[in-house]
Image (tube, rainbow, N blue to C red; front, side):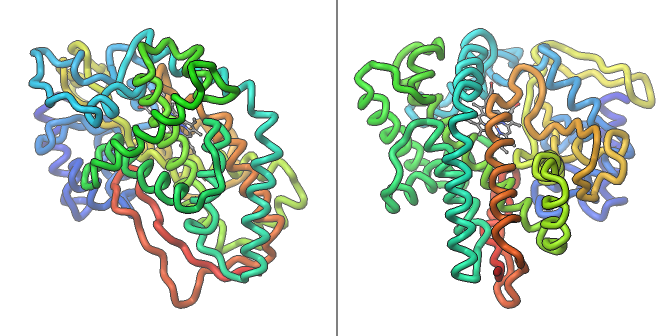
Length: 416
Ligand code: HEM
């Protein structure tokens, strides 16, 4: 496989799948991309897209290898062979570029470690409050006999959870709605979707600046305190930026997993309830399976920091040149039939389940353990509280427009 041949293969794949197997085609077909992924993966697990001039990776093994290979980095600037023309500096460009998620090396490792240690320390004590939050929302739905899985469950629950983690005040509905909007905007831009009101990033920055200032330099017993104490960060502005990252990265992903994952259980709701009743481990296994099938972060990007040759491939391997962009479709890797038999089926007893929903390697999600607890707790509360959950007969689901993080924007149900 070489660059020309993979470009040709991509074009061949396009007609077979009935649409362009390019980054653009995959983004446009984001509501149901699996036909395209399947054909791309069958033909070529790493393919060059001549239109976007980046490599598309769809195989499980190739994705895992690249994410763990330090010759591929998250910072496009250090990977570029020639100095790149940089954007004029502003808080918005700093807030996006200085997030640990887009940097590499000791500072990024320190931020990640701070999140990991703080969440490991707090996970037991968060369990009770998370359970109470989920059961309150589920009870409210049962009384109303109607539930929008997004607006009345996944959104408020994920907001409450990340507020507990960061130590943010809750209870003001207008502020909660603003924070939800601003963090969605920040997550959209971070994930590459920029058709948003950029000023909301400034507003989110102001909010966290006030939160950090309110601590008066004394680390609080929460993730903001952990960043102040252990994040290895330059100054309070840097703390503000990492708080924005954790808030957006931790909230929007959990919201999407629940908001797009629970609808997959709706058609067999009573069977799932029965399974949970007969085996309490169901919530844990089902969480893993929904992580695999939904994959909230559909893709991540890396840049080759040097020329890298891959041996695998039909005609002598492929060489990725320094500075080239690689898009790793975690969502496609998570449905690779070589790693997952019957990849499109939701099987709660799937074992092993080596999904890549949290990524892999030096940037692997440090929130994975708490996200798992959040999701298990939410599934358990809903399955135990609602004996009936079915789609609303006259209000169909709507979608978020972001091709990477976007899932359902609303999914209305009737319930008992
Ligand atoms: C279902 C929930 C979640 C999913 C699917 C998810 C997914 C991911 C993925 C795929 C990455 C790696 C990005 C890359 O390699 O470029 C990541 C990074 C990250 N996630 Fe999560 N995440 C979730 C929940 C959370 C939570 C609850 C937090 C909590 C604070 C969090 C904080 C972070 C941070 C700080 C990073 C950046 C790590 C780094 O670049 O070093 N995530 N997440």
